[in-house]
Length: 75
Image (cartoon, rainbow, N blue to C red):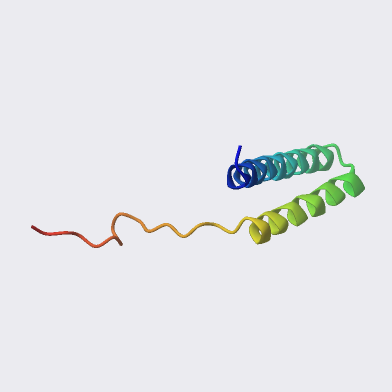
């Protein structure tokens, strides 16, 4: 396994782990707020917000052009 492949694999694993934490935090927040456990719900909501911000900073969205924006080639 080369170093570049290892880095890509580590990045994929990190992205997956961060996404799992984000989903878990939002779920816990919702459940706690529905149970009227305000402190736990707000804390989990803040954790979710932090995970979203970290995910945006560490793994910025890749720029993708839509098919409408791509230049057309004519024969």
